[in-house]
Image (cartoon, rainbow, N blue to C red; front, side, top):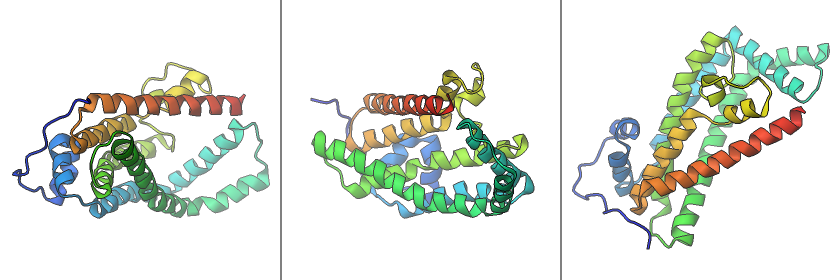
Length: 243
């Protein structure tokens, strides 16, 4: 019999939307209890998309941001052992001003689809495999509000990227703890692990624990192990591709 937690009090006053957004960062357990009791997801999706897209769009609208796009694409070519010709470089320069639109479009499509996929997996595991009870709307609302953490990452990382004149992720372990040489397996592994994604995993685990009245630690540990396995696969693929 899995360990369970008592249900959140139905007498707790409802939080406003702004209180929910802030509460995900400051008091996640109480906030997710409110979201589970009164599920709503559209506002959270819109806010996360706005705070993710707006700073990136502004960055990629600058000359520095467009140079950084070209540099990033050059690094991708070089990581696969390809040499960029003059004609290809000129093509990269012509496409750089459109990078902001591609980035915005990928977020508009990608975040809701990713949230749906995560909610679907969680719903299938808890409701299907474990026999727990919750509505999909509740699960999706929890996932949507957990995205506030990812929105905060964009607000944190974009000014750093502007100062560094780079689009490389400043919140992964490779940037925080540069203990391995570039292009080594260790550097790629640390580069695949993001501090904000760890925060998001723990936050989502809290939300699912509140919703399904289960303890957070086992959920968080399982999700972190899955995240670690994905990071290992990414680092291995990058190492083989760059060999």
